[in-house]
Image (cartoon, rainbow, N blue to C red):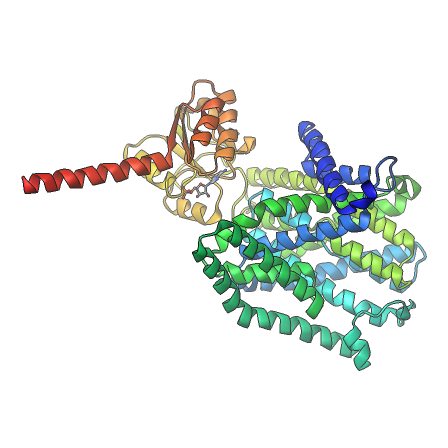
Length: 580
Ligand code: AMP
């Protein structure tokens, strides 16, 4: 039966195995992502047992890339993109050049041709969209300056790769490969264009696509969504979001030769200017996460574990280029642009891996007879290992930032947020790592709810601190001189620096009950006597938080209802008095 439904079998095997391996990884305190990759290895052709359909898995993974980039676009305005161009453009270009040269060097050493070296080097120079975005989102860096630089940098890399993919077939003959093997652009070959012609045509196509999006897309897409939103059908709205993201991405790829990822990014960016974007982003979340998982599974499937033993030294050298070479280059470039060390470290870490574009480039190189298959295997192994190591590198960077910070004298965080760091009020001498308060109140979240609570605490002169993770909010907090810990309160290191053990009250004023639950659970374990008030929005959430140990749970909607009733009755009482 299995061969009758290969698509279903691939989805089931991909998601099922990923879930199993991911859960085991989580249990062993390894990032689940490593589990997804290993699930791919297990379903791949190089390990015994079940073999999933590789081509289908790769295609499904593309959906994940589209939805991820669409989501990024939703958080990104044109102004954001333009605001980081001063560093992202030269940064990406220099980094691509450095990585390509190093790759070329290794290729020469291995006795390959210059053409092979160039393809190899280019493939090592471009980071994976999925891996970078996951890392940035997990650390809630999307709204920070360093997050924006990393994404802008990635967009430039993607654009460079689109150009490389188009030019490579045209250049193949020149580089000693076989240009007849395939023709990149039917239009270019029909017009009989040379190298410069192909380059020009590519630029014109990308330009036309961006132009159409900015002029027509900007009006039509928000209009469609507004129209659908007013019909009141949630189902249709969801469908509209998905249809727009996929159609624009596909159209961009088919009609304009722009990559699927870039097309989706632009669709999202157009939407980000309309107030509906927040809802649109949320509607695409569940599907996005599921398909992003399939991306990692499909990468794992390409990996032959035996290749590590077959050629250990070239592989080590490849990894060195990806992880050390690229990082050092990025680090120095970011510093040269006078950004803080913390920003440089984050950017280096997020780019110290390779992924989907590298595979496409390697595949094309082999087809054009430019790259030996050994080169493709090295790129694959380098990708999977660098993706696995990426979380470790991020952990190392977090550790290093904190150490530098503690030593003082080095501006690590600059204007943007640094995880778990205390932004103490100017007049206090609190250590940069943990609070000195005891018997205090910890307030999580400084939004619509938390800011009102904080004002009341301040008026009553109680000792308290605030944990908040959104950059723009933190800036406001700094101005008002509240003691603040920057970071996601669900993380144990962030909670620890708030001195949970010595605190008296914990007030959780964030809307997300799942995260609130994690905070309650950790707080209860660390301090059995702490009194916890939490915020919820449904009866199920109230139950959840209660079961984890919160003392009092305020259900927002219930308080609103009480407020409405109270005001209505007050009116009625007043008019009764007036009439009587
Ligand atoms: P509001 O819903 O307007 O009260 O805003 C909630 C606030 O809590 C926002 O400022 C968020 O940035 C902040 N917030 C949400 N989740 C977390 C978290 N896990 N850790 C720290 N701050 C958070």
